[in-house]
Length: 444
Image (cartoon, rainbow, N blue to C red; front, side, top):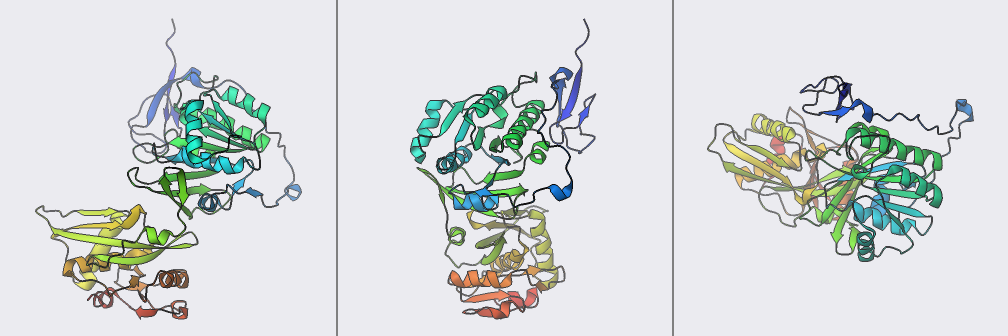
């Protein structure tokens, strides 16, 4: 009896090799090679999409029409709505609200075109209970199936304009011998769904679970195959959720959508700035304005310092880049003479938002300095500015939009570097600073 032939496939990049390695030779990821039978590879030929070669001048380049989901925050992240024939991958932790959000979107979409909701995790009765709780229309088509062939046949029969797959890890193809959720299964099923979308023009939403590292479970190449990749973020013990695009072929990847989970489903947050402010003005706190796409959002940065008993003090940043915090602390010590080498430093962005905008650099340093001296900023004061290694406070883009958002929220003073656009702001006292030393002197 001949020995069964096997191969090893990387779960991150899909690289195949004949023997096991602790580290993938292609992408360098550790412990991602999975063993599977060579017979797992599908033997059927690829399905043609009917798109032969044409001259570029004959290609119709009209802007793709979009369909609104009826959920403004969802449409914002998608780039203005759903594009026909697109494939959207929605990832997030279990229980974060992925299925609820898509079912609410389906309830609005069913008013314009047929929607097919396919679940491989729940029964029809469970789907109806969720639909009743969220006020979903009874006209929604639901199907509990895991076989991709049966789904293709049902799509051919019902001809929906929108197809929702919940979740990709439960779907299987009979052409692949491996279990559901394996690298080969996910890759083959996703390829079939993409063919459905491109041939029929049906927009497909795919729900994907994430690993403990936060990446979508399965091969990383799954994100390269689809048109749009969305991540649903948030603490399951908190009611607020953030929808973020990390890839979008039809729009910007800088936009975020903000929702609140309630008993009747997801509710849009119309004023996100209010959500990320605690309303207190204590030592170790500073308010800044960051940009998420075209949207200015006020965020509060908090800092806490405590004496350490260890040789190496801790540097912990919640909602920020830990390496960026270490760099800013070095600037604070070298350029402002404020030493934190004997202290544990903790920083936090209120509300669970991720702060990657460098316009919040100055707010972080003033929060740390305020915690060191037990001093606070003047009442109703916001802080905007990037900090360089020389201690200089640099201007950031769309300064006027940021200051106007501060004024709208009732802030009467803004600490920021001098810039032509900042001088155009009205209704606010602009306090110009050139370096970190000047900024620290403003603590009272």
